[in-house]
Amino acid sequence: MNSLMKPSVLVCVTGQYDCDRLIREGHKKAEMLKQELHIVSVHNPEEDLTKMSEEFEHLYRISKSLGADMTILFDKNAPTAAAGFAKKVNATELVTGMPDGRPNGFIVLLHELMPALQLTMVTKQNECLIYSVRHFDRAYA
Image 1 (cartoon, rainbow, N blue to C red):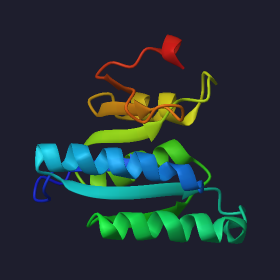
Image 2: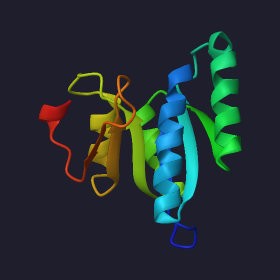
Image 3: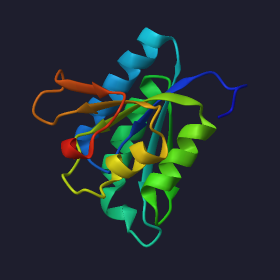
């Protein structure tokens, strides 16, 4: 972890309009904790992101309006890339959507790589319904 960098809240998004709810929740947490806010989206290098250009532009505008940067990474191993980025920005908190249910899903693998990271998952149905865990159990995924 970069001890010289201010602690931050990291929000992981995909190329979907409704990921703005994650960015807004991350902003609330960052404000409350007086931390930096960073947004990251990790994609396979072979993925065609031009199909999501409007969605990414929307998420970028939301991020900028809340004083955050947004980074898109290309890597075949999304959890490892996100964990590396989390370390780079000194993340203490992670905000994501809900897990997709796979035992080897992104959130489960990311949490295994960084178990001390506070994890907040926000549902699609109700952005006020938030799950915060310190020790993620595979049963939740």
